[in-house]
Image (cartoon, rainbow, N blue to C red; front, side, top):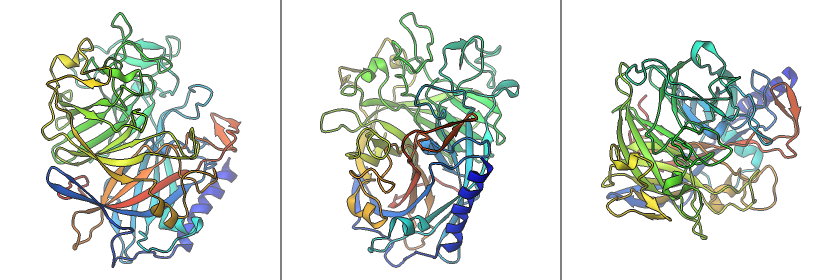
Length: 497
């Protein structure tokens, strides 16, 4: 294991040494800009400006294959900086989901990794080779932090088949846990399928998951501090109204199986934490792809750690549809400014996916300005759905959703040695992109310009894998890919260094 770990480290370190600045500041755009208007403001996509990867067979310090890291990413507070040469340095904090689970959920301890990076944006029109393109975003693994629940007990990735009773003092005690998803009555450990990550200003981390679907707050060293439980309409319940956390089957009401709180982001100024379901709840139409577009965005005030974060908002977001009227489900959100968000909606195609030809993989924009706030209303009761058979109930105004950044725009991919559709080789864009984070360009001429980073969840797919001490061969190598776009976001306040 150490040999593979060292060789992978040498791979990224060698790229860092060999890398030469590729910055071309004079144009500040990679392709012809794409402009969209939302709430009277013009947002601009200036194109793909960076690409990097971590090889599929790389292993973390625990000896496990480092995979699934695109489930959630953020930039560690205080690390983002511009160099005198026009490049940028920083440290990603990334969270994988529940481990290599192609043949079923495993006892994978939840964790997060830190990855240092050097970013040299490329704005040129010439096509880089696949190898040279990787010099624009050089990634170096730093460390892994494992997550623990109460009493320093290891968390698990096993499918939750049982429910642990709420702790004494819930809900008045802000640190007391609600009913929790556990592996089984004989193995009563908290199970987490992590999908969203926010690095908070005090060094702690918020993590959203699919099982609960809950939001957990962890200390910098991975200890559970607090649990946020969403309204009853979101919780998975059986026909008798009892919690049923398993992801193997859809519940009677609440989030669908493997369709939990995929999106997580924060308004740092106003201390509001936002989370969004991947698609509609079961009662809102989430049991079918052609009726599941009306998902929910929820907001909690996390400004006062002495109280349990109160739910302060809830809105309906209409997700995009395919040409067959199936929902393009949302894998991530990111706060732009009050009322405005990015949403990563996509199909499941690409390298390691159902088909090689991706038709929709985008970071879009949506606005909740003017949308109906349904929190605290009858719609927080699962007996009162917001939609029926794919139609939103009258009296509810949804968010406004517009197309923005297309990940598979042909010219952009070709400039970085990438492609969509056949052949299924290492240059094919990955299937599962599930994370977004923003960082300012520090450009005085374009003060509203930001870099939009996104990373893929490769599902730990490698021919040379290691999971919980056992080797595996997934019959395909899918690298952990990263993309970087330059965008203009007027008035954005997503990152406060």
